Length: 90
Image (tube, rainbow, N blue to C red; front, side, top):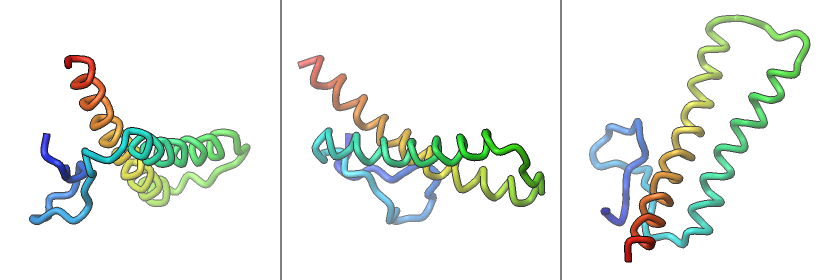
């Protein structure tokens, strides 16, 4: 695994948003946890509201924004999984 891995969805060359795959596992975990919990909290707030505007454009933009944070968190979790599998194989 390369030391710096670009996050998913960034097609620029060279990539500017990277994950340090050699960062300590606890730092990687906190990074993923923060992004995933942020998305979860916002979705919970939306789900428990009695009335919500259903403007398609607004909801589409909101979904795109949430997808970015969720994808970043999943990318970091993928790095954690690879590192843990590599440790278990040793």
